Image (cartoon, rainbow, N blue to C red):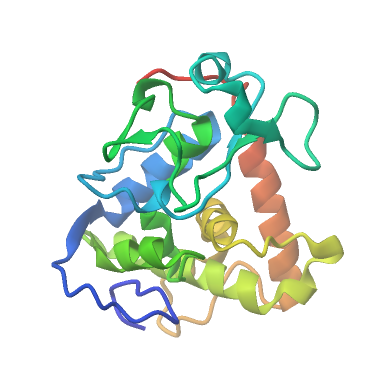
Length: 237
C-alpha cells in the first residue's frame, strides 16, 4: 500500500501540481470535530469551484434560517424522504449552483451547512473516487504529510475502513452502509479507529477479527460518534 491515498478508477489528466493537505492526524482530528459539532471544515479551496459546478443537490435544514433567507424560494424544493422543512437547492442547466456568481459563492458567509462541512480531501483520505469527475481530479491532487508514525497508521486505518465498507456491505444488516462515495468516505473517517492495529511485530493483532465482528464494531463506533454531536447550529464564518 502506497503512502499517498489515490482515489481509484479515475485517471488524473490535469497534470497539475500536488496540493498540500496537511498532516494527516491534524486533518483527521479537525474533520471529525467538524462533523461532530457542525463547525464547518477549513479547506483551502483557492479558485476551485468543482463542488459548486458538479450538479449537486444541496440539502438545507429548517434550522438554517439565515441561509434560507438569502436563497430565492423558487430555487428550493422539498427534500424527498425528509421531515417537513428540509429542502434541496438545485443547479442550473450547466450543473452550477445558482448561488455561484462570477466564480464566487454569493452567500458564502451564510452558505448551507452541507457546504460548510464538505471537504474533498475526505476522498484522498479514504482512497476512493468521488461520484463527480471534477471532484475526483481535485481530490487526487491532495497529498497528506506524515510527521509521525501515527499519521501513517491512522491514514492506513481510514483507507481500510473505506475498503471494508465498500467490499463487505453484506455484513451490515438492513443496508446500513451508504452507497454514496462521499457518505462512505465520511463514515470511514468516523470509524477509522476500529481498523487501527496494535504495534506487535506480526501486525496481525487487531481489535476485531471476523467480518461480522468488524461490521458490529463499525456500527457501534458510528453510533458513539453520532452521540457526540451537539445540537445542530448554524455558523456565519
